[in-house]
Image (cartoon, rainbow, N blue to C red):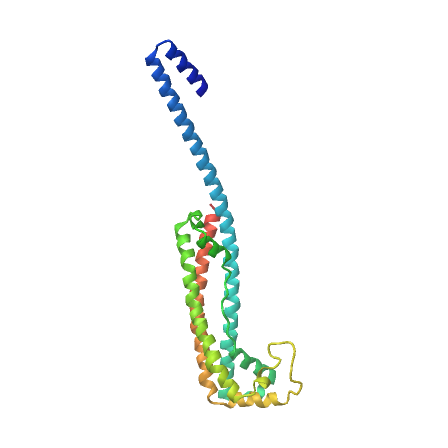
Length: 254
């Protein structure tokens, strides 16, 4: 088409028809501009289609990632629940002097749970890659983008509470246990399959010493309190995660 216009212009120039020449020249310019605009529109459409496909893929990956994070939260909340329940049982046993009603292994299990340090370890591959690569623009939903950006802050606050418990157990509780009780008799065979100590007679005494020790109360009360505070912060992260999953589903259903 452009070649045809060019040939016509040349003929008009040869025939000294200047007015018509300019009309055809303008027509040729308009045709080129229209062609460029159409090409740009097609290119934009293709790019939008590619971005949309990429967004869908990212959303599916994010959904899988945050579902895994909910499972991880569940697992650590379950551990904290066991810790709190075990401490409640120990307080009841101490108060009611009912140690004889429980087997030694059950009591050792309660005591072992007091020395746990559950920590939330979220999957962050897709989220981190999305934020660090600058691809967040591919997410169309602004609220979802904001929540993804702020999610690490929510996790950091939870980890601060978890570290409070961890540091308490490492720096305060463990030294107390080591100085006052037989660690091997309290914990051998509770968590691991293999039992290193064949003679189990001293386990009864170790458990009895722990239950009857008055100083234990303050230590395990502190642990229970730290677990309770961490559970509350974990609930905040859980609700935040569920909101992210809700927004992801809304985008995927469009």
